[in-house]
Length: 104
Figure 1 (tube, rainbow, N blue to C red):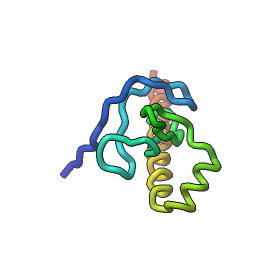
Figure 2: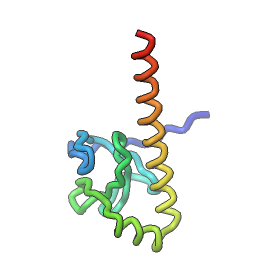
Figure 3: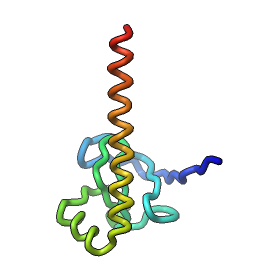
Figure 4: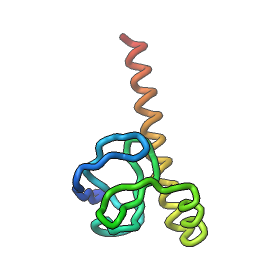
């Protein structure tokens, strides 16, 4: 049985960490369209991001991350798990690229 993850289209924006163009979001620990203050992770670099009042993505500072960890450990754990998934995907893609290069 597969579970589909909801994807919400957003006005195109850039990741403030890696400058990738982003136009969609999937919830980490909420249901529904992202609200101001909700957090997500850049699918290209794993940077923790937060939606501002205009649903633009802003960088979550280390101090904000620590405050989140103290206030809502469950949300912090969800965010860290999402970051790990992205980083594993990035490493897998790099390894696949290296293997293909070696075979050519």
